[in-house]
Figure 1 (cartoon, helix red, strand yellow):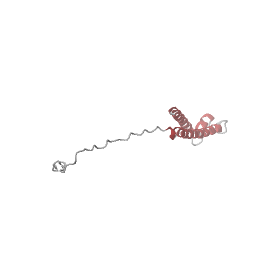
Figure 2: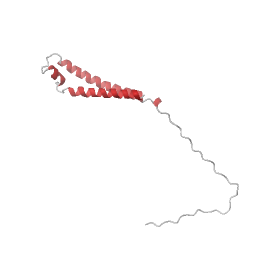
Figure 3: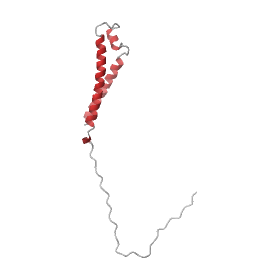
Length: 119
């Protein structure tokens, strides 16, 4: 079970790094890689395809990360895979011994320690 979890976490990390790279490569004003590879003119071939690819890759990697995380939770979070609980032995005490001698009529009182004065 640990190897599956490790594999899923490695896949999540790889997808996260790729997502960061793709988001950082995009320019919020429409430039980004399309202006680097396609030139400044949007009429050139391939500029629109680069923007479409970047947007689709962003959504795909985001969805992949979500699916991998949910899959790792479902696979590793099953309650049937929980460690069995051990029952602690109950503490048993021996019954007090009863003496056969009759109780004496005189009772002894415990000696109390003298009180110490507060300083």
